[in-house]
Image (cartoon, rainbow, N blue to C red):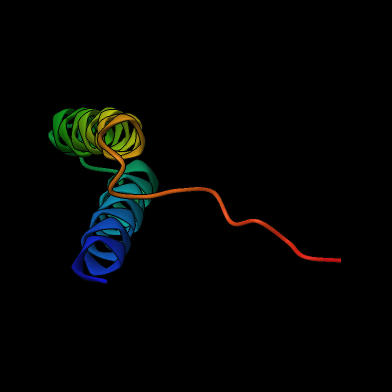
Amino acid sequence: MEFKYLVIVVLLLILISLGKALFHLSSSKPADSGKMVKALTWRIALSVFLFVLLIVAYTQGWIAPQQHVH
C-alpha cells in the first residue's frame, strides 16, 4: 500500500515541475529560460525514475497486474 503513495508523490512532483516550467515559459525575463530548462530536466529525471521504479517493482514481485474475473 505504501508503494502506491510513493507513485502518487512522484506523479505530483512531475506535475509540479511541469507547472513550474510552464510558469517560467510564460515569463518574459531572459533569466527564466534557464529555470524552465532546469524544471523540465527535473520532470524528465522524475519520469525516468518512476519508470525504472515500476519496472523494478514488477520484476521483484512488489506489484502485479490486476486480473479481472468475468
